[in-house]
Image (cartoon, rainbow, N blue to C red):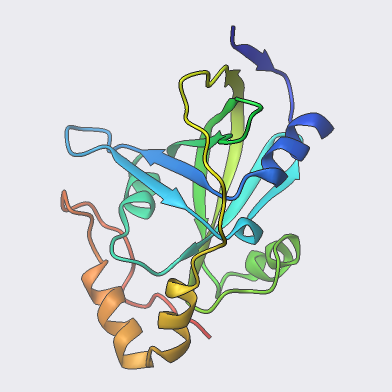
Length: 187
């Protein structure tokens, strides 16, 4: 039986800290496609306070989350335990984008591990609902290691390559505005 929580208490923070990955879900206001993205690198997620979380968003193949947040702000984060202790935790809230060239970004980065190459922005979420579920049907998996492929690709990418990604990510797959033309290159 699921339970709702009033805040991100120490027990929930401990559960979140043990998860090697999380999932991000967003959707546009009108029609369009729901986006669901798996995220790795456990040092890219942080609980900022009892009702605020954030994660470092890395350059990738699309910018759906950013476009949907610009459209309506709705976002859900899901953590799913693959260990013997089954549990699913969902954080429902309103998100916003903080670019690396925003003054706020320097204060936020202290909540995360060393910055990964290719950081596009921070996604900050005001959590409005915190609920868990049993996860009894989720299979067991053993973590081998974090996959280093994205970091390796970003370490060798040129400014020209990142500029191409920014240009390609100016709109979502549904045509919503995502990255601005002046979005900063990782640096």
